[in-house]
Length: 155
Image (cartoon, rainbow, N blue to C red; front, side, top):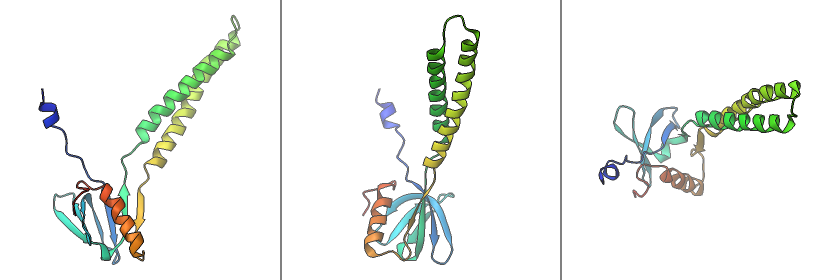
């Protein structure tokens, strides 16, 4: 009975892309934030260390929320169209029945578009500027990155 608990997946660190001051780029999963460096796991499984002093910016990639936005938007739109159509309907009037059949798909498409756009906006990567930042700003950036690392308590 405890097997599902024991098989629980290890939490993953954020996917990040580092742009160095010299223009070089590193990409991978954030494993740990050290006082003077970031530890990444690259796509090919190699541990890579990036010195914070050499970093210009860090881009934190987010999981796509477009699918969820489309689903929620379409459901909300169809529900709104159904409620609106039923509220307007009067018994026996052919045009009111036609209004219901028109309002459901119309509101569904509008909700679908709005939900997809919202999901896209929420999925945009966040960029943290480190190059040229003050020590206080760099400490805040390190703390923000630490919270998204696979091993957030690593010191």
